[in-house]
Amino acid sequence: MTTYGYTRTSTVEQVAGLADQISKLKGTGCTDQSIYQEQVSSVKMEQRVEFTKLLFTSR
Image (cartoon, helix red, strand yellow):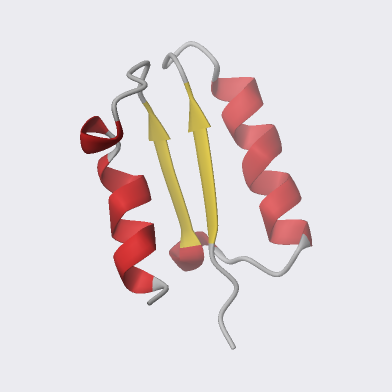
């Protein structure tokens, strides 16, 4: 079974935060191919493209 993960930071300047989240997800069994990530400041769900992809992938 594939383990999927999602990580997000609000700005592209938060590279360390994104890397830390990815590292933690990999520790739970996620792979580069199963981690959806984005750097967007929007709280509007329609602007979170990678999150939407994850929702449809995990169905």
